[in-house]
Image (cartoon, rainbow, N blue to C red; front, side, top):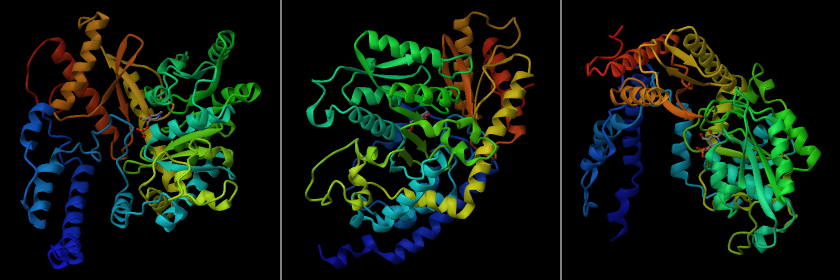
Length: 500
Ligand SMILES: Cc1ncc(COP(=O)(O)O)c(C=O)c1O
C-alpha cells in the first residue's frame, strides 16, 4: 500500500468533522443524563446481550466515519450505564467532569508513552506538579510519588516498597531468606490488599484481618493484639494498612492512633485512602483524616472523589527515596540515570509497574486549574452532605434500618417492611438482593449491596451532585414498593414511582 492509500486513516480534516459530531453527541447525552431524561441503563442479561455482538473481524470497511458515529449513538451509548444519571448511586465511580474527558482525548491522540522524560516531557512535568499538590495536601511537601492506573496498582506499589524497606532486598534475592511476612489491615479493607499479597508471593493468608468497631473502624486494641500474636508466631509484620474510606461503609480508621502505634513499633503504615483522601481538600472535612501525615505511603484515587474518568490514582510516599523502592530494574534501552541523580525522578517508570503509561496528570491538573481546590472540595462536601441527608431519611422512615451514620458518602441500609413481612435472616437477605436486582433490571435505580457479618445490606454511594433529595425520597419509595411486592410474591409490572 502506498502512503496515499493510507492517508485517510490519519486524515486531520476527517478527525475534525468526526470530532465535532462526537462532541455534539456526547454533550446531548450528558444533558439528558444529568436531567434524568436518558435511561439509566438498558438492562439485558450479558448472555442475551452478547448474541448481537458476536461477529467475525471485518475484512474490509463496514462503516464510514459518519456511520460509525451513528452506530455509537444508536447501539453503544444507550447500552452504557449512565454515570451522570441522578439514579446512578451504586459504586464509588465518579460521574466525570467533562473537561477531564476532553483531557483524556488529548492524552489519547498525543499518546505520550511517559516511561521516561523524553517520551513525554510535558506529561511528566504535569504529573510531577499534580503529585506535588496531592503530597502537599497530605502534609508532605517533600514527598514523592507517581500516578498509577487505579488504586489497586497504587496499593500494590506501596506494599512492594514496604517490603523492600525491611532491608532484606527481596526484590533481588526473593522470599527464601525472609521470615514469614504479614500485613495487618482491617476486615473492611479493599480486596486489592489481599490480591497484592497474592501477587507478591506472600499468599493471601499473610493478610491478617483486624477487627472493626460498630462504626466500621479498625480497633487499635485489636491491631496491637494481632501484632503481638505475629511476634509470638515468629511472623514479621511488613506493613499495617489503614483505610480512609473503606469500601463497604466508607468508614475511616483512627489514623492518628494507628500512626502512633506504627511509629512506636517501627512498622510501615500504608493508608489506603483511595476513596477518602479527597476530603483533605475540604476545610469542613479535613479533620476526619487527622493523622494521615504519619503514614509512610498513601493511595488516593482520582476517579473516585476527584471526579475523574477512569483511570487515575496516585501512590504517594512521605520519603522520596522510598518512592523508588517498589521496583528496581536495569534496562539500558530506557534508563541512563545514576541512582542518586536528581534526573531519575523525571523518569516515571523507575517508580511504576507500567512501562508505557497514559498521560493521566492532565485531567487532574485541568480540574484544579479550572475549579481550584475550593471547587473540587465543594464536590466532596456536596457528596458527604447528600449521604447525610439520605441516612437521616432512612433512619426516620419506618420499615428501614440504617447500618450507621455515614462518615463519608456511603450509606448502607436494609428494608424489612412491617413485621408480617419475611422475618428469617436468610429471607431478609434474599429480599435485599432481589430488591437491588429488580431496581436495576427495571432500569429504575442502580444500587450496590454488601455483606456485613451474616447480613446483606443495600448500599448507596452518593457521588452525583445531580442526585437531589427528591430522588433519594423516590428511591426509598421504590425500595419499599419492590420489597412489599417481592414479599407478597406478586408479579405486578409497575412503572417507577407509581406504587404507594
Ligand atoms: C478503599 C479502596 N481501595 C482500593 C480500591 C481499588 O481501586 P481501583 O478500583 O482504582 O483499583 C477501591 C475501589 O473501590 C477502594 O474502595
